[in-house]
Length: 166
Image (cartoon, rainbow, N blue to C red; front, side, top):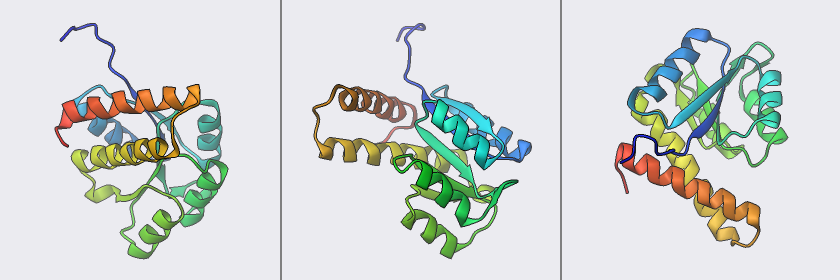
């Protein structure tokens, strides 16, 4: 393996207002590899602007932000970006909110205090895998779709190498 080989990066937008939680998530994602590039926004409005201007693969979205609280945070973001891969993060272990989040389009619902590095990376990997399969089912054809599929394949392979798996 070449030291200079360019590995695909998974660009993550972390929308989290608590700086300690944000740093903990960054450390967890950095701990095992350098596959993840994490950028942080501290409000829903800032996150929406960042996502609109950026090129992110996954959004980690806290439900308790200064400008939005609860399930409406996820609903507002996913309404603005229906195709976004959103993983909801929260301090509350609320099964009803978890189910409603997923039914609204979130890929997963993770409780921050119970979240371990492997659980977070597995959630990201699963979200990207589902997107990969969905896009393949839609059928190839457009150059943009082919470029997206190539990137997703490369990311999936990198994650398999880093974490093992099927």
